[in-house]
Amino acid sequence: MKKLAVLSLALMLVFSFSSAAPAKTVFKLAHVYNPGHAWDKGAHHVAKLVKEKSGGEIEIQVFPASQLGTEEQITEAVIFGSVDMCVSGAGQIGNLFKPISICEMPYTFKDNNHVLRFAKSDIAQKMFSDLEKEFNIKVVGTSSFGIRQLTSNKPVKSPSDLKGFKLRVPEQNICVAYGKAMGADPTPIAYAEAYMALQQGVVDGLENPLSAIKNMKFYEVQKYINLTSHVTNVCFFLMNGPKFNSLSKDHQKIMQDSFGAASQMIVDLLNKDDQELGAFFESQGLTVVKPDIEAFKKATADMPMKFRKWWIRYGEDLHQKIQGM
Image (cartoon, rainbow, N blue to C red):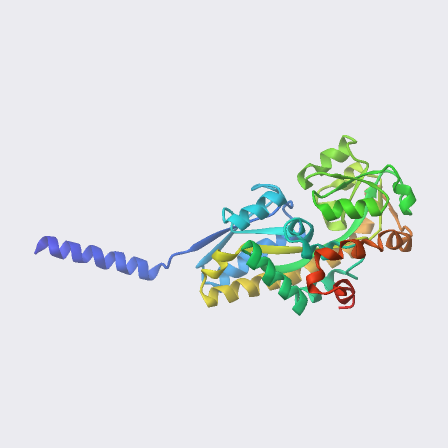
């Protein structure tokens, strides 16, 4: 009888503990950006919101600054499920799922807010659904990475100034293509290695949004920021599809609402940076150049026609539709 009573008490204790403390689900979210970047702030904002809204039942651990790998590596890791979530750009995803490359076409988006309008459109939702079916990754949030500008050690006012110019670009097919169209000699180099490449003269310059140029301190090894505004990047919060689908409906909604709020916050931060950072760079001794935008638009104008085979399943006029949103 005594043994039976002890066993019953033990079972009651186990049951009470399991009832009082529901199992916590922990997810890893990886990205390549330094702490303090808008997308890092967005990732931490998501983690905070999800923890609060789920009552602590879901925890998101953020791994910044390429801790878990390059953008290519963490994107593949999310597909295979060894990493739960990541931040990945349209150029990177476009290496796998060609239609999304339309987002990397020069002068497609008017500004950062245009990206949010695109993300909510039926066209974007159809693309995201097809991406999930083909690669088991779910887009849980979409925002802008910012408007790309060109840094250099000489003023760049037109495409002719980029002849023989070694331009660091991301390791993505579409970035190499627009680098060539702009008149440069594109050199693919990983984001984490770009500063050293500039410092050692491996490349002459690079192109990134103002927020990234500040966050990565690229301005320390460059003299000019040329406001070409050639691409407004789209970036995504991706999650392994089966892991998202394993969540309850309530938890799925919490995730999507939280990533949606973070996506808006990121755009707000980028807009603020675009307004303020020109003065910051000038205070650091750099010269801000306003080039001939129309000349760069003309140099890159035929890219959508050249690459439309990648997204033609969504309509031949897809690029114009997105531009008009």
